[in-house]
Image (cartoon, rainbow, N blue to C red; front, side):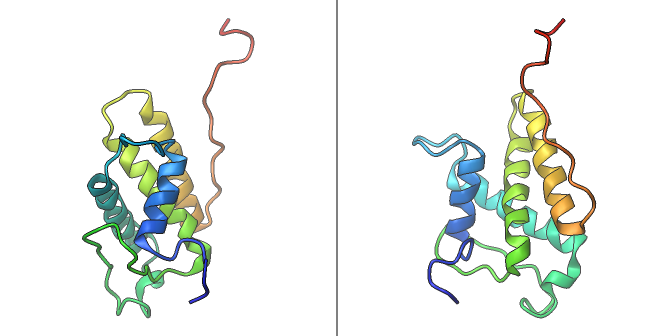
Length: 133
């Protein structure tokens, strides 16, 4: 393991997810236990989409984590960012705000696209052009 590698530990994944969720100031909107659930569910979904990612490193099992700590997550480097998008998508899908639905869908679409290689859709949103006319 290289020092200072990106997205090596559970703590790294949760921290990077907080950045994308714009949830970096305490008190957090998404607490550690809810993001940990999102991470574990994301790993299950990644296993469904790409079972080959779990064959050798995890003895064909999906890892599960009980706390946000420095436990190393065995995942090939090119797929690590996809897991962050999956965490964010799951966390936002559980949110009860209607405005989160589009962002959750965008995050989950990016997660799926990054794992499967199927085109990633553009993230949309914001104010419509032309002043909403």
